[in-house]
Image 1 (tube, rainbow, N blue to C red):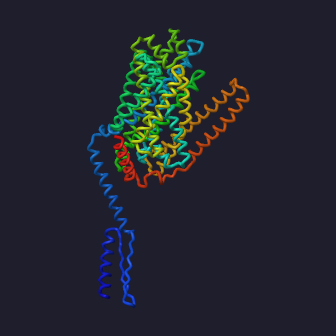
Image 2: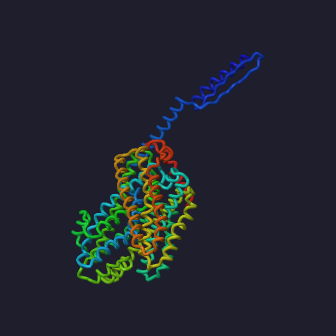
Image 3: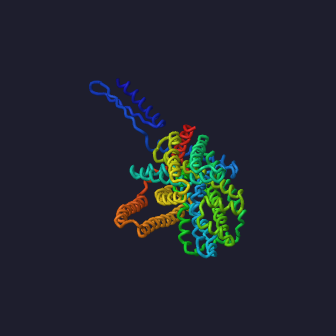
Length: 572
C-alpha cells in the first residue's frame, strides 16, 4: 500500500511539473490512515506569477511582430496609394455644407443687404462676410478631426459611445433629439431636389418630392456593395456641384481683388453685418456629421501599431482638409455670384429682384441676365446639392439608429431610411412650394437646437481620449474645440431667448395667452440648459469605453472592427 502511495505521489509531482508548463497545477497527496485506508485530495488552480507573465510576454511579442510585419508591408506601398485608401469620408460628410439650406442662408444675408433705400447700399457687404466662411471652416475642421480620432482610438462611432456611456433615459432622450435633427437636416435636401426637377424638367413640386424619395432609397441601396461605393457617390456629387457653380462664377465674372480681400480681411460694416456674421458662423457645424464621420473611419482597417495609427490620423486629416477647401471655394463662388449680380446698381430691376431672393427666384434672375443655359446649370447644381444632402443624412441616420439601438446592420438597413426620409417627404408635401423659405428656416432652428446634444458628448469623449491615449497637440486641440463650441452654443441660446422675447413683446395676442406661453416655454428653456450642464459636467467612464491597452496593441479595437465586417456581410 505504501509503495502504491509513493508511486501516486511521484505521478503527482510529474503532473505538477507538466501543469506549470501548460498553465495549470495539479497537486496530489496520498495520506495513509490508521485503518490502512487511503484519501486522495486533488486541487486545481490557475497559475499566476511567472507562468502568466510568460504568456503575456509571448502574446505581446507576437502582436508586436505582427504589427512590425504589417508596417513593413505598408512601407513598401506608395504614400499616395495609402492616402487614397483613406480618402472618401471627408468628401461624403462635406456635402452637408453644400445643401440647399446653406445656399438659402447666403441668399438671406444678401437679401438683407440689398433692401436698403439707397441703391449704393447694395454694395455695402458684397464680399465682406466671406472671411466668416474662411475662419469658420477651420472650426469645422477641428471639430470633425475630433470625430475622426474618436473612431480611430475606440473603434466605435459617437452613437455607440453614447449608448454605452449614458443611463437609459438619457441615451434615449439623446437618440430622439438626434433623430429629429436628422429629419430637419433632410428637409432642405428634399425641397432643393423638388425645386431642381421643376427648374430642369418643369415637373410639379409634389412629383419632384416623390421622385426625390424614390431616388434616395435607390442610391442608399448601393451600400450593399460597400462603404466605398457610397463615398464615391459623394465625391461625384461634390465635383458636379463644384463644376456647376464655377461655371456660374465665370459667367458673372466678379472682381477677384474684392473677393480675395473679403476672404482674408475681417470687416463688419452696415446695420446687419454683425447678425449676419453670427448667423453664418453659428450654422457651420451639422450635428449628424459628427456621427457619420466617426462611423466612416471605423470602416478602414487600422494597424494596431502606433506609427500606423499616426499615419491614419494624418491621412484622414489631410483628406478632410482637401474636402473642406473644396467646400469653401464653392461657398465663395455662391456668395460671389449672387453678390455680384445684386450689387450691380446699373440694373435697378435686379436690385428689386434681390429684395426677395430665394432659391427659385435665383434661377429666374440668372435666366433673365445670362440666358436659359445658365439657369439650367444652376438647376443641375441644386439637384446635386439636394439629392446628395438627402442621401447623406439618411445614411447618417442608419449609423445613429444602429449605434443607439444596438440592432444588427441588416435590420437597420431596411427600417432606418423609413424613419428619416418618409417624415421629410410628408412635411415637404404638406408645406408645399410656397412655404419653402419657412421650412428651411424652421429646420435651421431645429438643427441649432439639437447641435449641443451631439457636440458636448463628442467633446467629453475626446477629452477622455486625451487622457487615455494621448497624441501630439491633442490637449490644445480639445481646449480650442471646447472654447469655440461654447461660443457657438452660447450664440444659439442667446438667439433662442432673444427671438422668443421679441415675439412676445411684438405679439398681438392677448396678455393672458402670452403669459401661458411664457409659463410653458421658460421652464422648457431652463430644462434645456440644465440638460447641457449635466452632459458637460458628467464624468465619463473611460475605463469601460476605451481600450484597456495602449494604441500600440489594438486587440480590442480590431475585434470590434471584425464584428462590423460580419455585419456588412450580413447586409450584402
